Image (cartoon, rainbow, N blue to C red):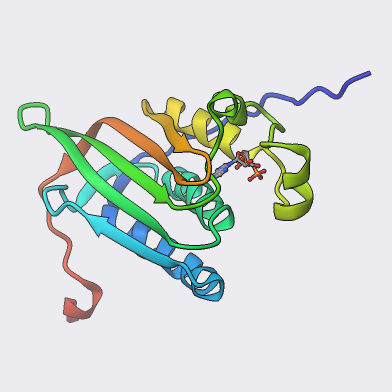
Length: 187
Ligand code: ADP
């Protein structure tokens, strides 16, 4: 007697997107929580990444919010750092490979759980649901979204020391157009 989860069709809408602005939003959302918990929340960008990337802003944001939300949730002291890095640039194809690392100094994940946590409804152990809440669905959805967008999510972690979630983007189209900041626009 089990419940079946229906497959849901996911629409991906690629649009030229200001890459950095996504991270500012993420920062704004978690700043307060991090401050409350007394942990440092940092964002670091490689300035080699083009400003405009052809991505689905909504899906990328959704995935980052899940990964950063987890990092803040499972870290009680130290820091959460989001680092967006350029892996390679293909000037002929006008594409970049990128990685966003979400690094935390939290509780960590045991090796035997590292693959499991991407399965639907799996959390690290029974106690976590009570202590930390959550559904065990976030990472499942995040990984699927990353895959649909030609990317991947990987993990490195040590119990008691922290975790790194790697959010890889492959062959993302970039644009050379530079958007002016809002305050520069004069009508
Ligand atoms: P939820 O957080 O809603 O339970 P997720 O799918 O996002 O669901 O995460 C599944 C489980 O993976 C979490 O319950 C937690 O046990 C573990 N986990 C995820 N991110 C981290 C992290 N940064 N540090 C430690 N454990 C984590």
